Image (cartoon, rainbow, N blue to C red; front, top):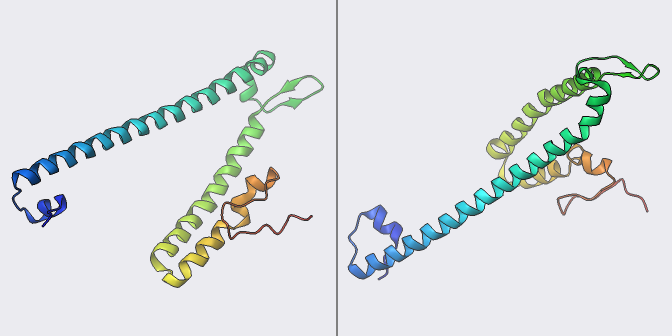
Length: 164
């Protein structure tokens, strides 16, 4: 009869020497796969951080001409007069931050309530249809629709706006 490692741990049984060797080999293999997963995860994290750093660097380099032309006050003034070539970005920055905050105040509680309903309260027979309907919701595809991509991430979602 073969003894599993989990049974040995849970039942606190003793192992024979052959079983102990197979357990040691299994643990060695598990350690090797854990180490490989750890290295793969670290590589993914470093790749994402490298890409994010590259984006930030590209934005900084791209903003240098505007900062040289209009000065660093460009970010904190709201004057926008093309005739005198005075430009300030405070109003658009403020508007972006305000509308994003309002959207978050509305969307986060609704998303949490929907997730809670689906996982805790919804009957099993209704969970899948609701999850599919939510994944097909047009608001979730706003960025892809704006770019002209009417495809959906879910196979059951059909685009109704594309006309041939």
